[in-house]
Every structure is written in structure tokens, then in C-alpha cells.
Image 1 (cartoon, rainbow, N blue to C red):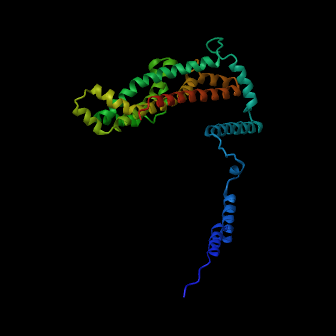
Image 2 (cartoon, helix red, strand yellow):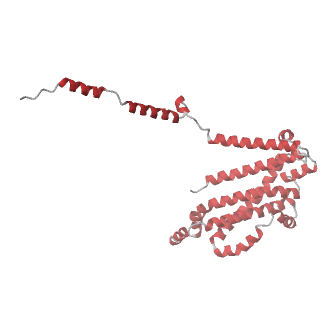
Image 3 (cartoon, helix red, strand yellow):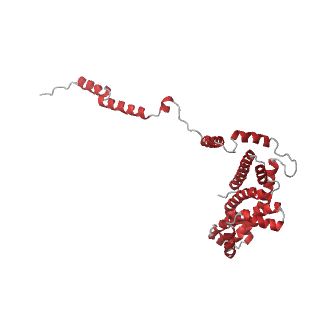
Length: 308
């Protein structure tokens, strides 16, 4: 007895129905939920086609600086309006315009513009600071290089370094018997210690292996200095120079108040005797700006000669 034939058309149509049928309803619902969650998490900027850009760092820094200056001026104006004899920003600005319109006038030795006074102070600082560099930096190298010299200089530096710079002024007047060299002498003394200490510390920080290699190679002391010590000590040395120039610029103002003559310190004291407080405030800002420029110049010098 033969088997009954299986109908082919219904099987083919069933397979076609399975292949051509759409996804399961549950899968479609799950895909819709995933799309909804993705849309909620997508940033609004992506939906509009724009990226949220952050402000440059320099712009934020400039804004912070301007905000600080504005806050300072506002507080200054509030203090000036509370009474007393401190002039406000507008009064000081008006006086500054008048002073800096002709900063280099000269009507005698005791009546000169603020420009001549600043240049006179810078000249004294330059001479005293230069002499201190010529003495302090080589002395710092020797103290850091030779332990015997370091032990000799340690108690002297520890005793004299904390002395106020103005305490040296009477000694300068006694020795030089003139105000101008006495002020330069004070600058020399107060600029000496940071250079000596920082240079000596830099020499001591050099790894001993470098010096051992130089000894094995039988290098001369001058070659050791130029090839090993100087490049390694230069960052420490420039740090000492930066500290010294800051101290020197601070001290010259006080020294000139006591010695007189032409200089920004004498100009401040003279304006106080004339009861021109707005001129004193102008001098304060001038001293600060000049000191900032000196500091930044040495910072650029340090970056220029950094060995990294």
C-alpha cells in the first residue's frame, strides 16, 4: 500500500510567511523603549546640531583679573566715601593724568618729574644689585662646592641674613659720608644673601655621580664649573636673583625716604610733606608696576635659560 503524497504548496507558503513576516510585537516595543531612553540622554546641543563650546582659559583668566580690579576700585571708592582724607579713584586718576602728562620736567634738584625719580631709583638699584651679583653668585658657588667654606660661612650668614636692610644705612652713611653711595650700599647688602644662599643650595643639589664622573675624566675645576655646575645651578641662581631684585626695589624706597635726594622714595616723602595724598597713591601704584615689570623680566629670563 503506497503512502499518501505530502502537499508541497502549503509548506512553501508557510515558509514564505515565516520569512516575510515582521518582527515580534514584543521586540518592536522593546526597540521603541530603547529609542526613547536614548533621546532623553542625548544632549540638547546634539539635537539642534550645535556643540556646546567652552570659553578659552585665557578669556576666563582675563575676566577674573578684570573682576578683581573692579572689586578693588569699588571697595576703594566705598572707603573714600566713608570720610577721612583718602582720595577716591576719580581724584587720583585726574592727578595721575596731570603728573604723567609731563613726567620728565626738571625745575631744580628738588623739583623733578616722577619719571626722573623712578630712573634715579632704578639706577641705584642697578648698581647695588649688579655689585651684589658679582660678589654673591661666585661666593655661593664656592660655599656650595667646598664644605670647609660652607661651614665657615654658615654662622655668619645665619646671623646677618635676618638683619633689617635699613639697619645697614647708618653704617653706609658712616663709611661713605654721602647719601647716594650709602643707599647703594644698602641695596648691595640686602641683595647679597638670597643670591649666596640659593646658589649654594643649587650646587649642593647636584648628584655626586656627576662630580665623580668629572673626577674620573680628570676635568679641570673650570671645566667642572662650566660643564657641570653652571647648567645645573642656573635655575636656583635665577631664583636668587628674582628674590634679590624684589628686596632691592622694596628697600630703595625706604632708604631714599631717609637719605633724600632724587628718587621715588624721596618723592613720596616730599609729597607727604606737601599733604598731597593722591600723589602718594600714584607713587604706590608706580612702585608696584615697576616692581612687577622687573619680576616678569626675570621670569622670562628664567624660562629662556631653563635647562629641562
